[in-house]
Length: 478
Image (cartoon, rainbow, N blue to C red; front, side, top):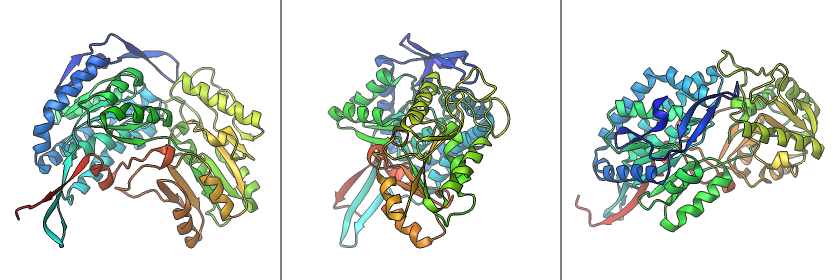
């Protein structure tokens, strides 16, 4: 793919200045299929300059003009959604059905939701009746550097690009070098939709070179990052000298509290939610906390559910689980499974090695551990693979204590028919999100965490305001 050696800067495709590259590996076959350019300092500088030059005019554009652009992007994206699904399936090994039904359409949902927010968004607001001549202006922050992950590539890219465009920001997007295909396709779509030159810029590269330069660049006003907690800490430090706003959406180690009065399918639902996308989800419910009176039954249900999950190639049709994205990720997951066994957790499904019938590819067995204690590494570390830990609890107090005993705080889950209990737990669980009884968050709900999971809030009005600065004005002429 020629455009993997080019960057979209200033409204056109230009050859990468850096000669470095990264070989893309098919996770199913372990065979190389292309090479993506890795941008260097000069590539980042060129993209940042294009965004800087485009900012004044785009920031001054009418909100209706920006909304019209997103509508055109949405229309073209809809026509190419199958192309997007295939790009995602190839680059990060999502099974094609998952890519079609969940991965690729996520960007369309985000566009629709942000457009709905814009319909009623006030860029000029009265402070209050006590100050009739004071106004609060919501203004775009400036050039935004966006660094996105490989696990849900278009969902995460759209959660940044769409609200930033609507806010009036210009941007430089650096997707993961492991998943460049989908962002190249998005750049083609944005170009076809008629985005002004320099408003959206795409470079490729790794975190140590292109990412680090973007973070330290003096013309970049904000960094929006989704990825690991370790990388998030590095970004905060790198952005300090230029006083950038930093929005971080990081890892998680979600607890799924299952009480004796939970719905019959709560355990199976929790297992399948843990293993979707091969377990490569920051908000996965990877710690299943089960009330002791139903613990043994729950372990058997989890075993049955895990063993019923088929594993297969990314290109094959069906609802199976695909491989993890890379050899490095495969080795990490295998190492942590070995650690769980060594620490004394009881292996009830899966285990070390590839599933039966596979002698190549980065396939991991759907793995379940029981009798896990919260001090074990498999209960502390974000594994980012299809590995579930089951822990018993005696009562609500112990469940909360275990759930909150983690440096992370992204998503927690509650399964109980007791509404008063659910409401109590929603307040007591230390996380940015709480989902209960299998009910997903509604359209426009903010996505983000606390503590080591970062503090960003992506989606809805919060996701739009994240790309704005608040200006206070007195003496406004009515």
